[in-house]
Image (cartoon, rainbow, N blue to C red; front, top):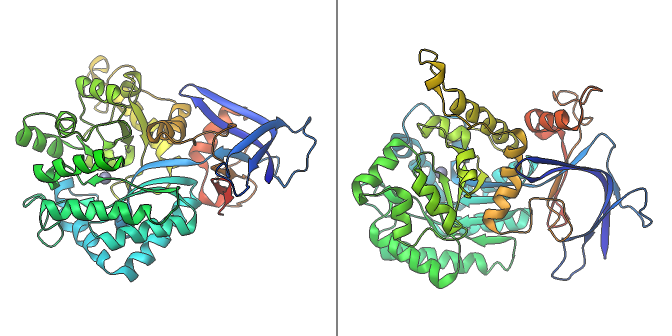
Length: 441
Ligand SMILES: [Zn+2]
């Protein structure tokens, strides 16, 4: 069995290319087979002879679902708050006390459902989550993603360091942390939903003993499960690793065997040229979190330099270090901060010395990171509306909301319209959403 959607598609097959598929019919397999959810044909509607199940409003646009590479699910209730203190204080004053509450599974269920539902409404069809240190709450997040139909990678947060974590929110020993991380993999895989996968999650080096980092690396080798962690996020965090291990985060994580193909590294605002070379060779990649970095990163991540070096780069909200859900906002922020990096920010410095040349990125590159950049890093057949890929998509309809600023005027060619879609779309403009061929909103 199949179903068909008649639509105009806008997407970014490469970093520099906007592709518009005008008035096409997309055929999606929805049989019970393994290929269910896959796009099997895309044809011009003028030559299509079959029946059409869904016809979009002619003003609407179908876009590939977006991939948020970095979300702290338990931080959802603190979104938009506490952004006035440094990272290390923010963690101990606000974040760890909140994350420790999720042993209360009623609270966890309420937050997880609200978060996943909200992200889907923003067009986030794939999410890479840090859950909490608690095993049961982590499995419950995976179940929630499975029930609500979101494609997700869910990680139990491993953290045992005696000074980098509070005694009331940590794994009792490295061995306990490894045991619970293994159990988390088993429990998430036992859900039997291929769309929801575990991810091994050492919080970051300051929160983990060397013994825990070593054990999690061995667990990754045994299980074949991917890894996520933070890397060179801020001056404090980058400097801490230099002092403790005498090398950069990237080098230290590589030494532990934690940098491998598919490893998701959040932030990386302070990576060096040699760090980028190491990452490019490994197949690991970076979750660029532009808004969060503005508050906690102490620097702008050089997205264009990393892409030019051949490193996988996608986008992340970093809820709640970043104070907005949804990746369209992060696309706009990624463009904005790249301009800050290129132009510089202090007018008292001579123009010739104020910024870093060749740092700006375009709206097209930003959306490519939010879709294909993430898909490439996760090695998942998503990120574009293309035959052979899964049908993960959302519809933006500018006629849907009377209060949204999103309008297409006769002066808006495709390039201008695409920029508007990125900068002006609000959840009220997002209509239908599909994940793996299943309509979930
Ligand atoms: Zn983070």
